[in-house]
Amino acid sequence: MPKGTFLILDTDWTGEIKDGDIVDGKVVLKRGKQTKEFILSIPRMDKEKKEFFDDVKPIYFKGKLGGTKPMYILKWNSLYPVAFELKEEFKTFVSPDTNESLTMKIQSLEPIKPEFKDTKILPEMLAETHDMRFLKHMKKYQTGGGGVEAKGIIMFAGIILLLGGIGYLVYYFFLGGNK
Image (cartoon, rainbow, N blue to C red; front, top):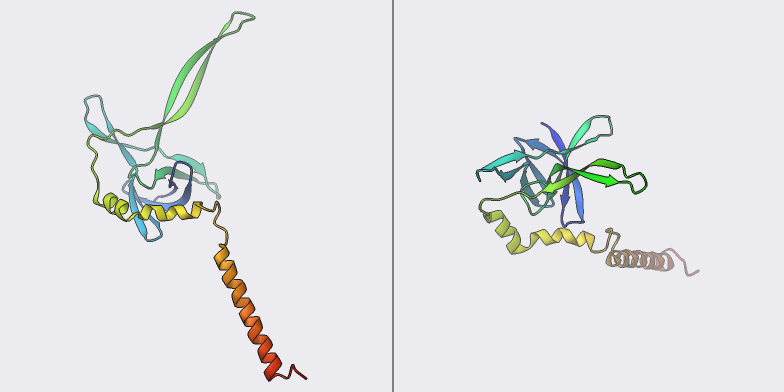
């Protein structure tokens, strides 16, 4: 069963990396109590306006032991990964000193916007939007790094003081600390 790495974006600028197994062009990722299935191909339209599915080419990167691993970029609120296509552009520059022209080939990766014939609201999307479960993962970005909360520190300090006080009273009254 092939494995892949998935960058799951909560917003355009925040996300997390997860590993998962790719089965029949799909992956099921778990996040807390939620599980979601992603389809690793995107719907597209050909010139005759017929819908077809085009496999998304992943980004391959080297693993720690020398092998390569596919990486897909996903948005949690979408079924399909972000796909890229290579755009080539030729620009001609003219040197003002020598009047020589130089043609440069510029290549860039641009995200493909999938075209949908008819947009359907899936029951799982409606249920997720209804109870706002998708917002609970945003709390970890609120503080900017997820440190220890002040409430936890206060509770810890209170428990330490309580145990210290009890220990002092036991020492003072029962173990003869008043002699």
